[in-house]
Length: 287
Image (cartoon, rainbow, N blue to C red; front, top):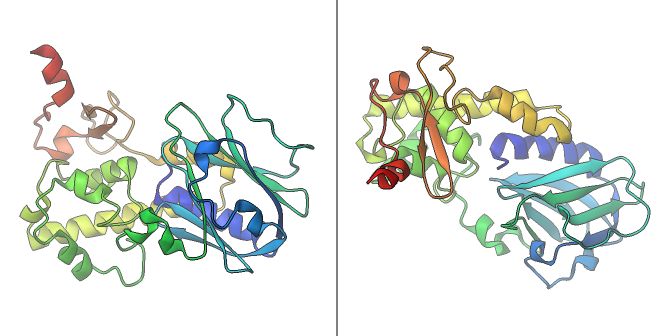
């Protein structure tokens, strides 16, 4: 799933390629992608893009008529820039293409989604806060006013484990499964540690890990073409998605805990005093 750094890089890319250009056609190919119907998608046709913003993991394209085309790429969605779009409208079918946006220049982009779950979402709204996922977003962890005191306040009384707290978009916007693993590894903390149990010193360490991990990932992604962002993300990850590989810090074997629809990766030496965490799914299978 694209997270804050990749969506920020897409925002940079689209700002350069979209702002000032006219949208001449918006073509939904998969019915499941469109989450709003009033105003209709045709309402943005003939209008120019004035800004591209990132709101957590959402991309927000605003136009000169005050409308916002808000997209969430979900787990398997992606944006593909086309220097020249194919002639003729796309044909609905079983392929990954979900929506196409065409500019007056002949350029544009496709939104695609692999797999069968179809969670990619496009909203056309007059105010981004009309999108439920945007309305409930917590603060952006890279915002200038997101200081350590504010972070500590968010964790006060938070009874969830750190892994779940970091991924909660209503608590902190933009961090997902991959970067929560990376942040906790950088902080040398167990994903199962309770957020409310952190000492002030641990809050400081986690705050620094959060800001540093995300800032470095944004810098790695900056200037990378949209089509190469997925590979760039994977190459920069130290523990997430690297089960069985050596930890780049201590050399211990990276372990995994599996859940029903996701998994986390961690280093026992760096994060759990050398003790492997129980893999709950495997434990149930072995009973």
